[in-house]
Length: 448
Ligand code: UDX
Image (cartoon, rainbow, N blue to C red; front, side, top):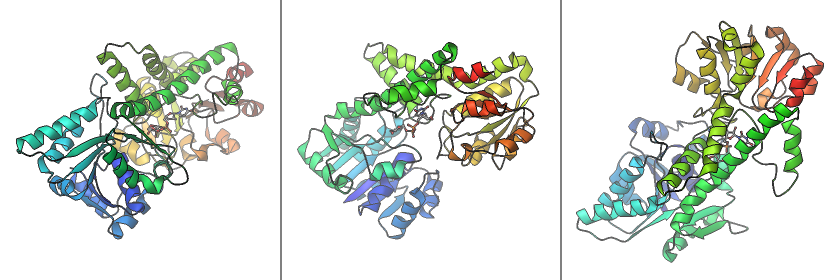
């Protein structure tokens, strides 16, 4: 099948590469010329396990190609995926200008029947807007060519995106047109073996499914963070509570890890956009507002613990903190809405310095912050500790799980850890006279 993908960002590139990997012919289009040039040389703009190899292999075998020419892109695919960004507006709603621009160029250039598939995360009703945009452009050309707009939201996790695409839990298709459904079934057949993972529904329901999934997951996290803050005050350990409730299959163990807040390009943006959409249709979605505000508060949780420990913000001036984990979660270099950024900003605001390390996000940190006197980028986990007053953990990378505590004790000024991901065992640390603050671990605090 010939497929065009508009947008070579995270979603577009993974989609294009994975569709080529199973034998489809794919052309990826982007307006960014230098990005397209680099992709042709096999240089991937993001860190995503397994992606570089399949991009290179499929490009070398001629099944995956790249272009900046919109006309060529429209001409190429019978199926046209829209996978461009939908960044939040100032008011939190998704900005659809890029989606609309692609729809327009499809309408301006198409000469044969197309299926237009929306993969970008877009508010409910966007499918209709894409439809209208293409129809208008066609009408301006005095043409009437058949096309259908289908919603096919993505459920890729950063760091596991290739695997998620190749072995999906579900493939959501929003269309009521039987011919489009048939075509989409053919397209996804290689990923839909053994049992049927395809769930077909109307377009608006498919659009809402994406937001519902992310909002539900964000709700689970904010709920646990709320309970963690309560546990801390009650002298209970949220980690014990987590295991206790997770054992109920109706609740389950997934996505109930408390921490220093959720980040990334999806949860914060999608919860906000869904809240905004609700307002637009006259509904006050109170739970969504709470999920967001609990998360905002949780992102400053580590800083609050630090301030509490030192007895006030003023005491932080001139202190140095080692910070492990800059990416918003492990296995990515993505720092969008990362809790580490809030922690660093608050520390800098109080006149403290940061010595930071992340296994993948050092370049990204450098790109975001450049040179600053109060930020030292460290080449290794252990060098970040040298001479620091305490260690802060913001991301639970595997490499942080079993550090050399004796070495840490000699590198730090004090045996003091602020753990935003509950990576360590408070009882074990207390035995070695560490002062340990986790999230919602009333126990660790009462140990003092
Ligand atoms: C998410 C969805 O999982 C994915 O299906 C969707 O397509 C895009 O959004 P992603 O943003 O890559 O994927 O990250 P995810 O692994 O879901 O984690 C999001 C954030 O939640 C991270 O900051 C993570 O640290 C945090 N988190 C996750 C918790 O704090 N606790 C948990 O129990 C799980």
